[in-house]
Image 1 (spheres, helix red, strand yellow):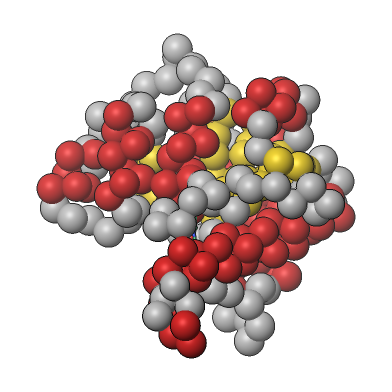
Image 2 (tube, helix red, strand yellow):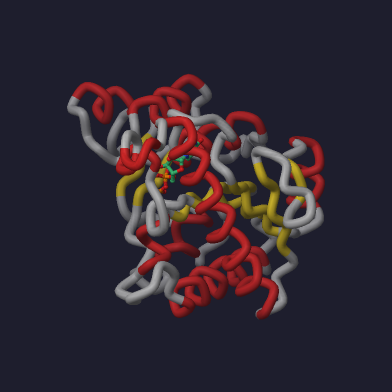
Length: 222
Ligand code: UDP
C-alpha cells in the first residue's frame, strides 16, 4: 500500500451476499475473517474505517412483502434485524483478531449494541475503533446502500490532498442505469460529493487497496 493514502476516513459497505460466500449457511466465517484481516491492515496505518453491513444473505424485505400476511414495513424491519445479526458476527470476528469495534444500530437495541449517535461514532473512529453501522437507515423502504451514503454524508472528513481519479461519473451511473447502487443511494453520494469505489470484496487485497485509495474496481465520482 503506497503512501500517501488518498482518504483518511472511509466507509466500507459489505453486502449480505458477500458475507455468505459459498457457505451453505448464511454467513461464511472465512469471509468475515478475510474482511477483518484486511480492515486490520489499514486501521494499523491510521486510516479510519466505518462499515455498513447489509442483510440480503438472511432476509430481504421486498421478497417477503405480501407473504403470510407480512406487510412491506414489517418485512423491512425483519431485513434490518438481519443486518444486526451480520454486524454482531463481523464484530466478533474483528475483535477476535484484536480490532476494537463498536456496533451502532439505527434503532435501539441497547442490550446488544449502541444506538447510532453521530458524534459518538466520530469519536470512536478518531480513537481507531472500527464502527459497524447496523439496521440500515432504521426506516423501511430504504436499503443499506442508502444507509452507507447517509452515514458518509453525516460523518465526512475531507482530505484536501485527495485527487479524484476519473472513471465513471455519478451522472453516468444514474443516466445509464448502471446497477451498482440504488438510485437513492447514488444521488445522495452525488449531492454530498462522496466518492464511491465498487470492487470485488472477495479478491484478496482489494479491501485494503480500496480503503487507501489505490486503483481497484470502478471509481465513481465527479
Ligand atoms: N432495510 C430497510 N431499510 C434500510 C436498510 C435495509 O428496510 O434502511 C431492509 C430491507 O428489507 C432490505 C434488508 O433490510 O432488503 C437488507 O438490506 P439490503 O437489501 O440493503 O442488504 P444487502 O443488499 O446489502 O445485502
